Every structure is written in C-alpha cells, then in structure tokens.
Image 1: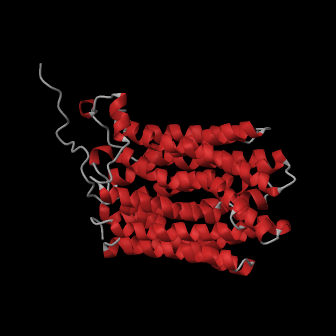
Image 2: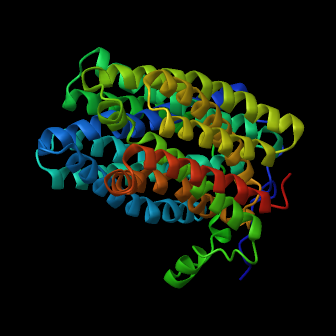
Length: 423
C-alpha cells in the first residue's frame, strides 16, 4: 500500500511571502472592531453597572471586589481556552480551513453568551455567562490572530497588527457611545454589541480563504502530547519566554490603569454625577492617540525593521501616564494621562504583536503558540479588577493602584531587552 501524499503545490507551514491586499486588511480590521466592541464595552461599562445594580452595595468597594472575582474566574477560563483553541485549530482538517471553523464557532458562542448575560438577575448567573462570553472571545481571537502568521509576510506584520489594535479603541468608544448617548438599557446594550459582533466577523469567515491541512499531515492526537505542547521551555526558546513575560507585565500594567477607570472617576475624582460622560470623554482622547500610535508606529517598525525600541517606548509612556494619575488626581490631568496611555498602548499592541509572531518556536504550531502568547493579553485584563480592587482597598487607594500600574509597565519594558533574535 502506498502512503498518502500531499498535493504537489502545497507547501505546509511555509512563511508567507505574498503581501495581503487592502481588502484582506479591511475585513480583518472590521472583524476585530466587532470583537473588541463586544468584549470591552461590557468590561468598561455594562458589566460594572450590572453588578452594581444587582448588589446595591452600601460600600462601593463591594461592587469592585465582585467585579474583580467574576473577571478573575473568566480569566481562568481564558487561560485554558486560548492555547486549546490554538492547538485544535493547528490540527483541524476541515475543507473550510484550519482557522475559519474556530473563528465562526467562537463568534457564535461569544454573541449568544452576551445575550444570555443581559437577562441575568443574580450574581452567579452573571459570573457564569460572562465566563462563557470570554471563552467565545478567546476562541475567535485565538483563531483570527493565527491568520497573521499563516498569511501575512513579516514586513507587513507591524501594519496588519496595527489593525488588530486600532479597532480596539474604536470599538470601545462606539460601544460606550451607543449605550450612554442612546440611553440603551442593559438588555438592549448587550444585545446590540452581540449582533454587531456577528455582523462584523462573519464577512471575514466567508470571504478570506484559509489553507486546508491535508489529513496526512495532521499529527496523531494524544492527551499527553497536547498537554506537553503547552509547555514551551524558556531555556530552549528564550526569546519566546522573554516576549511572553514582557507582554504579561505591560498588559497587567495597562489593565490596572484602565479596568477600574469608571470607579476612579466616580470615587477617586469625586465625579459620580458625570462619571459616564467623563469616561466617554477620556475614551475618545485615548481613541485618537491609540489609533495614531498603532497604525503609525506599527508601519514605522516595518519600514525600519525594528520592533524592540518601539516596545520600550510604549511601556514607558504607559508608566508615565499612570504616575500622572497617581500623583495629580485631577480630571484635566486624567485627560493628559489618557492621551499618553493611548500613545503607549497603541504602539505596544501593534509592534509587540508583530514581535510575537517572529519568536514562535515552530511554524507547525503557530496557532497553539500564539494562543499561549495571547494569554498574556487576556488574563491580565481579567485578573486586574480583582488585583486592582485589592490594591485600592489595602494599599493606598487609587494612588497605590496607579503606582502599581506604572511599575508593571516599566518592568515589561525592561524584559523585552533580553530578546535577541529580533531587533
């Protein structure tokens, strides 16, 4: 019996060399716009308000702690879902490709969970369905991120990664704007972002081709091999390890500085009556500088063929923004901090994503390895409310929170110095 062979024209796992088109980038950016709006509008506004309305606490810190616990549980789900989705998509042999089935499945799980979350009337239900929503978010984002390594050449990755990050700011602002300016209630607010998610992601699934993995190339599945694959030896692959560590620190610093922002405006700046409008104003400032930085610095890093200097700059700009909020707690200074934070995090999100695709241990396991790398984005965002609430309650209030944010961002900038294979 002869062994099965791969198609003659098939070059499995090869580094892409053909530039992606403007149409590809447009659909990619549109999908991310929907993903970020569906994830960050609840984090920034809908979920804290829902928890507060359910608990009706006598002390506002009770709501912060509950928000933190729910986010922490969701973060544990992300810790598992990201690498699992990546690993399973690496070995998917569907005729629709490796990534597209997971993008579609994750989008549906995410959207349905958000709609069910909107009708919960107790805190346990909120925790369950927010965790399911985060599972869906991780599924779709892990699979669509892997398309960068699959289809985008190295010298376009800074630009394309900018179109992962720029929609983050736009999606957050538009989501908050829809909920606040149109006075959408809880159920309608969640439902609007869920429907928008479906409408914005599905065109990418339908239009963008996805290379099919021949079954002959699919590795034999064993549970032991799957579990072992989640361990990437930082001694054998130090650049992957340092990039992962840097990403965890910088994202934790950013998350500490942003996830409790509504509470900071209400109770740190003593502006409860204007908190939602203030949040929208700060987010718009953040949006403008974030987009400029992510697209501008992402493209510039491609032209200069350098990634690390941009990551240093991004980390320290975030640290500076946090220190301003820590020691000059005034709304006018908060606007300056929002601008600096947008510049720093926009630059980081674009360039660090491109850097991450260049330090992967194997082209055969891009999805799984990027899934592990993406843990460093999702988990800090999920655990930051819990950690942040503990810092606010026990270590100096919001001043302590923003100092911690600056420290983590600065350490993340230092960690990337140890990466050797990428300039």
